[in-house]
Length: 417
Image (cartoon, rainbow, N blue to C red):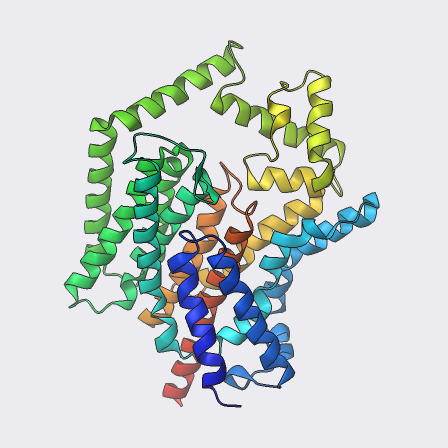
């Protein structure tokens, strides 16, 4: 079948998902399912991207595919153990597991097309900033949601997109100074989104993103990385020093921690999070193998509140505000292994390419590693996979950048031969 039948629709969907997934409701979901539909059609018509059958792709990278499917396995084992079956609890886990068919069909897109993703992420950051500025009225109000997505994960995704853009500088020729400057500017716009949303979790993540970018962006010249690092740190220092919003939010954090430690008020913003973390660990201790199950998390919190282990207000929350602890509570040991596998197995595949002599390959690996570790860091203070769209973002981003790695390796093999 003609290559264009698959290339163009999949390419358009891949380009649109970072550009509009944060800005338009269901845009990310539509893009994700379009890619899956074309993957299914390709499989039925026995099409082979890069002359590779789907089964061959599964065999060659079976550890990666198993890791991405691990939360689906954990959910199934929990439901098997509890006897409570419900399809809806597979939603986000299944989006991550469907990484495999997404990766397979993305391999049909030429590498020079996939690299245009860098512009889609820039557009995504700009769109996120515009939407945030309007909804927060220039940062004067802090709503619970930015459109259809909760403010904290929205802010985190905007920051992650901006980090990906900065790492993509390795795809830019050093002589294209204006493009490099544009990407650095887009990176700073992502930071500005976190200021407008006043999300402390994202602020805590910023130093880790900076360190991660400095390490993973090995394709960028050291002097350029140092310049970007110094400039960014200086700018963050200026904002932290002169922004009343930042100072107020950190002062509130200090007060919350003091009240929690001294038992003055445990139901502050940070106090509630700390109670949720303790509660999640308690639920894991009581149900260490299979967890309490997603359906029973609320009941588990209510039971802990009845036993005076957490406050009544804490029991009203629907998740743990921590990705790892939440999966431990609801899915037990299998949930813990699953979420860690989703972070670290693809991260390993990307990290091992960071020292490759080819600059383009290193950049693709650095962008993929940024996605994996970015979700890990942001997931320490909130739930990034609680929302369906973010699960799709993770799956499609990892698939796209891993496809870039595979395709560039094949190119280098052809050149060498």
